[in-house]
Length: 423
Image (cartoon, rainbow, N blue to C red; front, side):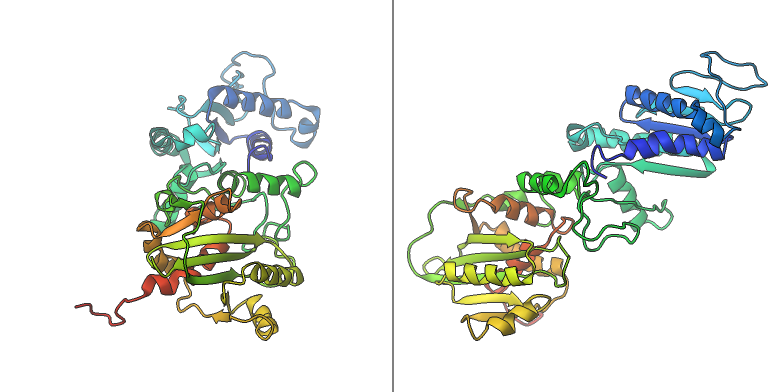
């Protein structure tokens, strides 16, 4: 989950108390990015266990209320960051990342946000420190039947969770994880355990949808990482930031080829996270090696409004006779409805189903500096477009990528031999 959404309350305070209530002989090690925070979590868990309500539920689980070490028969110690269950083998140790847990073990191991903030997560040496601590210290403290719980805000694609999930995917003998991912705004493909409909916000009473959308609009990349748990590397995934630096404020004069490319919503009502994107492109006849993105429109409209937005974009840009629309989802409704009304609508049939493969076909144009992007003074949403390209394929939307691929694919492959063997 995103920050301040209740991860620590549920998993660092309530879960240890609940676990010791059911299993007073369990050993627990709970860690976080800082020792002070880990100690605070320890104190909060103790307050829960010492409460009358807890004692009514779990009468077997008691702590020595005095800050002393009890005798061997009671086997109980009670300090700020370490305490035992009176009369049982259960123990709790709270430490910061890198803190001393040598000689201790756990049946339940908890890691609560191993990175304090973005600055730590973006530091490669610090990420390596956390990884080495996890592998060489924390993981070695587990018992044969241990459980490990990690709460994480995804600051970086190569953070602790990122590396563990990569290991689980690429190495069969690695630990396999159950991922509980509660994005701020639920997306279409999410797990069945999330009871929300797509497009609904996580905690509307405290953090309403309008606030989430405002955060996303202000900084799409940060919102994708912190609130949607889709971090992208600063330099970009498939499409690199360095390839998106060509800017213009005035289009070159002269004739050229104009083209509109639309990626429409994925169909069905209520799917708020799928958006429609319309892009306007220009390639001058005098310099065909230069391609200009001229205009962009995007929105999460229901179909009638989506059609109105398509019409308005075409009317705004009458110089673009060719209008590419992918022939699927809402496109299958729009194309037959408007082909006899608006000239130049061309159904687009992607030859390759894989979106990443289609995107890779046009990436050389960006890498070579052939693609020019408008300045923000011309296109206020260009930052959103850039973030979408850089975060693909892990970003929350791929509509800009799809619209770009279908617009540039034939320009990218002009003059290529069709044979498999090049002479």
